Length: 360
Image (cartoon, rainbow, N blue to C red; front, side, top):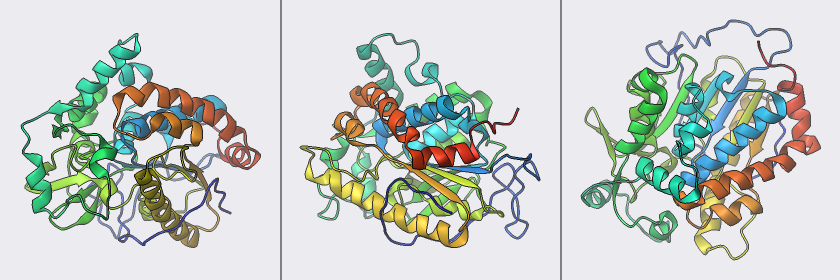
């Protein structure tokens, strides 16, 4: 039985793919080996989906996962499958590497202005402004279908994701140049074929974790597209902000799916700009279709969706790419999660699957 905290609806995405035990090399007809063939009595299998959402979205992920662990004792590192898109791909990598902590997120900064400077150096590596025409040649241009995109992203120039890849490497060490042992999917978008690319599966080329995160995080008109082995990739959110349906590649239904969706809010922000609701509406509708697919295939799976409320939106918008909003967004998320996780409908799901059921 699926339990959701919020609702929405949208278009169907492309088909399934299959995981290998290390993310690569397993023939699709063989299926997927999760590294353990049976769960201990009382243990639930968990899928974690981390959607896109910019810098403030990463803060939301951090706060939500921190709150989940504090409330239940469950560490996201043990999730049986993780799907990460855009900023969610960066958090997914940190989770798998056991590096989602304050030291990774803010370094040795002690004051807000130091955090802003430190984060800016990690995510905004300026390059010569050559990226715009590459986007235009691939047919991705500002238009009335995406009004106000440049304003939303708040980009004063074109940047490279090289610094972000370096951040992944400095945080994870050798794992950044390999792939996690547990199934991990990093979603990017192939600009030439205009298709979603789920790195870490048989449906995608083999790349390193840092390359996948860099590609998945290449937000159009903010970052230059990422070239890997002759293919050009962009933010996986171009196809879907969440890609929940990729979980269906798992050979067995998961007991619980947790979806953290920073760009699929159900309520508007007081005084918000017109494009904020457009973006959230697109996120909600895509997510709703993916959830419907999951429910159809796995009717017994519980589904928990976490989305920012008005308190989070107030500090994380209108510019989700603002490094100055990172700390306020994290703190607002903690306050929001205190109420969200304590809600009877949410807590009943957590209690059934996570509370007092953490493996030793």
